[in-house]
Image 1 (cartoon, rainbow, N blue to C red):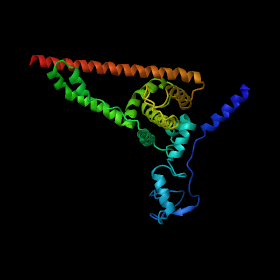
Image 2 (image 1 turned 30 degrees about the vertical axis):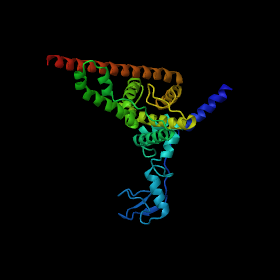
Image 3 (image 1 turned 90 degrees about the vertical axis):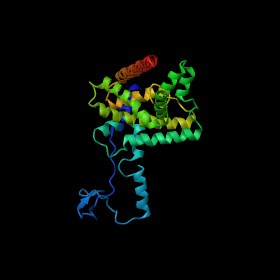
Image 4 (image 1 turned 180 degrees about the vertical axis):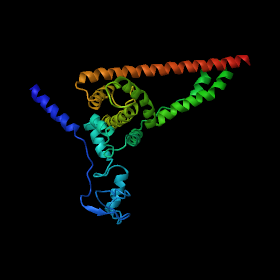
Length: 301
């Protein structure tokens, strides 16, 4: 029984390892209408003009529209192929992309922005809006005993509050910024076992963000509940995040056993917690030093 299961898992893994290649439209030889170069394929190798652009029909217009938004079935950088592989073979797809098969998949940064917009529209449609809170400077004015000092600090505190509000309102960009910490943790743990540089790890992490944003959209539509952020900037249940990351890392880094992947994933989480703690501690020191300096200046006056 276990042998049959193992064979089926090996077959599934071999099927997932197959790289996706975009299909060509044409096999016959053409003459470019622009530079008159004879070639075989969809695009002229001399001037890059696409075959068949001399006459426009409704079909070509529809193809152009679908190609712009990434839904062209036989075209390059297909968003449908990218979304499918993010669910079916995420780690192997990222390995293919980093290995040079870039034309077959949608760019991760554009895809993340697109999925974030879709996620935000669904959340807005559900009626889930951020709670109305007081401006952070008003809170300081209420609790600071020295009203004059509070008024001096208020503009700086307001600026910090605007940064926090920007992070809340610009989900895609804030996710990218938060992932700098995750990428650093991943690279730190896998730097001796992975051929990828920090930058390549960042690109891989952007694809993983797209995967989780897609899962968040599916979870949102199925449960109709808005999942708050945890330690990872994904809007998916924490247990699901851990299991999916385990699966992604296992394929991406070519681990032999899930046990080794589990150990390294736990190390990534520990490194991430350490970085968050260090940032909070550093921000606290800077804040205390800033307030102390302002207080000293105020006392001398």
